[in-house]
Image (cartoon, rainbow over all chains, first blue to last red; front, side, top):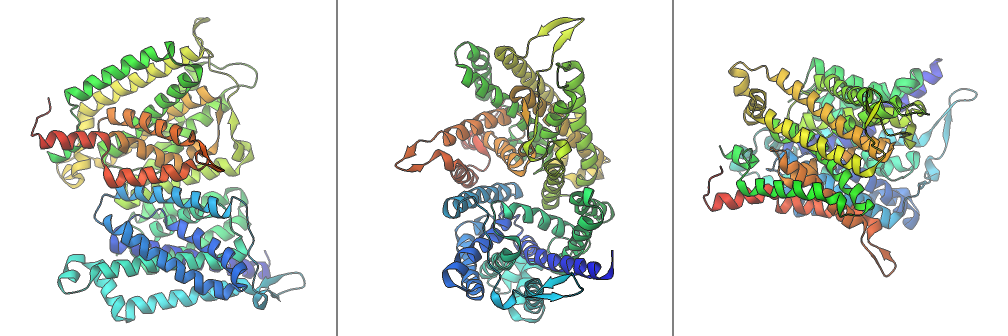
Length: 287
Length: 337
């Protein structure tokens, strides 16, 4: 592998890792703070992608679609939390698994009724449609850099939100000791709703910005969900920092696996997970 | 004690009577029902074996596996690979090997997953099952996304004499029913054996079990492998009945449906798993068979109704039918025999 190819693959792996992080961060926060196993998290990613498909056609711009889509997704998240999830925070994991599996079935079928079962493409915005030439016959699309940039910005925003703001302090307090935080006057119900909506929003944004490169297709949520599980298991439940490092690691292993060892590429990520389980059964950064 | 009651390890007399009636109905059914329904009930019995194998983990040991379908499918694939293109292979060879394949896979994967707990266990079992799924889905040599055909029904012979002709639908039905009974009796005895008591202890309080000297890792790994092997037996029968095996059988939906079957009847006593498997398959059949209203085909969207059904069950009857019975008998203050 020459240097240019190596760099391209490195960029791809970082960009894939950052995208996974957007999903895994929400998943791990929801686990860590509400103790909920949310199998339907991948559905929010799918919802985002399909929203990008419909809204960008309707509004004529992906940027506008991103803004409107994020708002819609957050509202959807708040409604879902209020209607269903908040009644399941103290229930058995088994109940949560079944509830969220039921939701996956419902979302998938609704998706099929509204959008059909075909694969759809989402056009890359003209402004970002260019490619940066690297060598005579290799170039890198600007849109992928834009994706990575958005993910980085959001990751930074998430970090600042959680570690530097008053709301973040309350979120951390809620994760550390739920009852104590409530006794000290933190409106824990509101915190739960905010965290849940944040998770849904992040997943939907990930789906929306990924839509032009991956296209939108049925069951796109389940595939990404499993990768997120792997990331969360490697990183340690509840740890956003762990999710970031694990997501980058998974991105690296998956991308280079496909180039270097294509025959076993599908298995490599799981082998990584198995190795981490042997070494640290509770993940690298268990809180 | 309350945990024990919720699991209804000791079945109330009324439940036992229902089970006996069910058995009589199952024995009589092939003489009354049409071919279509005999095959459907045959499928239900296979799924009941599958659900019972999961119940050993989910209900008895408190390990919620979201990847149990992998072991179901693996044995089916093993059967497909063992069956030659032009003649039937022997059941005496293919059944033990297929079950062994599933059991071994569960042993290897269990070695990693059993060290995790709670949420981790759920996610990790699902991830490894998905790994197995993609291994078959992505490799043309393993059948790829289309799956494989099982060209013949296995032959059951002793010293050259044909004992059972599994090509006969009724014979296959009774063979499946026999397997179902065998697995049920085996698991019920296992439940009350020292091994089963230890698993129940692990469900209730694993730390305490470890503190009084039980090697809980070994117990859980044994249970995981055994459950995998029994799921394999169900998968083998599935391959025999349908003559066809595909990656979907190992997929995440199949695993979640199995959890639902165990929940629906009531977990931890194996009888509930049987009832749940029958109930779930029946509900699925009803949903898929819904009529077309106007231009809208209700049956085509069965997944939507199934999703709503699952959500409603979790909200209204989270411990299933037997859970409702237990609640009722608790209210009456009655004791179980």
